[in-house]
Length: 143
Image (cartoon, rainbow, N blue to C red; front, side, top):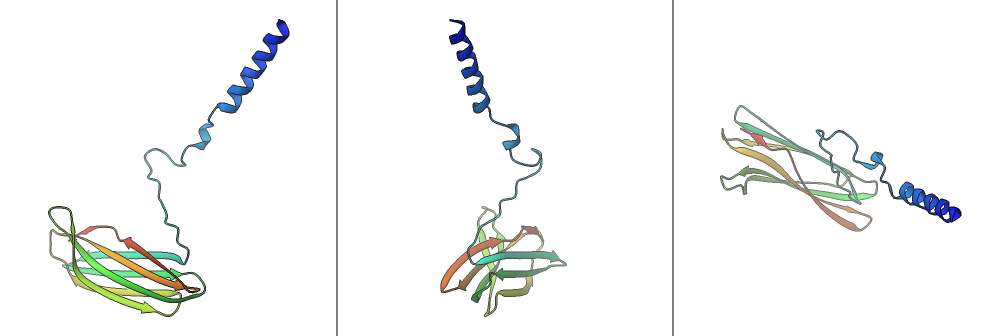
């Protein structure tokens, strides 16, 4: 009987040891710091949109870096204004292309005071015969 009891206790301790969840498995950082989610693309290395508003002017820019072997990049850039119902309206649109693995673009438009704006970037990259499209937004800015 004593042997069965020792075996049971040993088994019970093993079950507890292997079923415990380590505290180190939690997300890194403190509860007050946000976790950044990064997209994963096959052909696109990075898309970096930027929007600054100053003295009634919205200055927009974007840099797209694709992976080695890229044959073309095409970007459509839209300056958008937030409506009172929360939807977005395109105020101005531009496009640009590159036959290298980088595309740098910039543009400007009037920004009406009190409105909130963002830059929408839709990028298509062709690499090794495969096409990949991604959409990225800038941070929102108030004029």
